[in-house]
Length: 160
Image 1 (cartoon, rainbow, N blue to C red):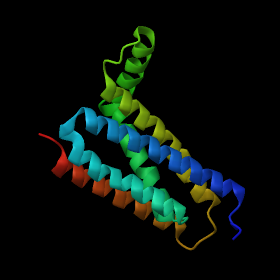
Image 2 (image 1 turned 90 degrees about the vertical axis):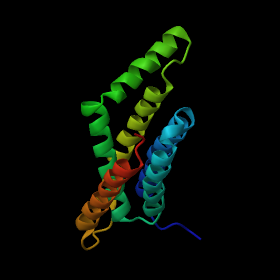
Image 3 (image 1 turned 30 degrees about the vertical axis):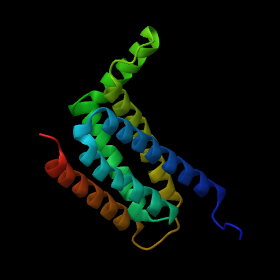
Image 4 (image 1 turned 60 degrees about the vertical axis):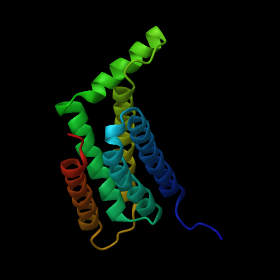
């Protein structure tokens, strides 16, 4: 069976998968290193699984979820906790010394890279999306749902 989607859309799907997968790897490694984060990261991983599944279905809901969660998470990581910057510094330090001392901040930086990919790929996928009625409302709805879920799991599953 021949795929009727344009090649440009397929490439945005691949970038969405790549961005989400990079973040899932960061969640997995962080959960292995810090067992207290396992429940939170397991629940957070569901967002990215949903983004992948919905992107596969060419859903504006999934594009919105991926875009919004990436914007919120990177905003927190860059401007509030500054863990993305700490991860980049830890990465360069490990390249210089040959020793990995701060793996979790490095995973935060990897997650940030995955999110930057998701931001651009989901927005491009939506812009290339057919002129479906209400696509921008679905995009917004997916984003609101993803961020609301994220806030809830952080409130209830964050280690104390």
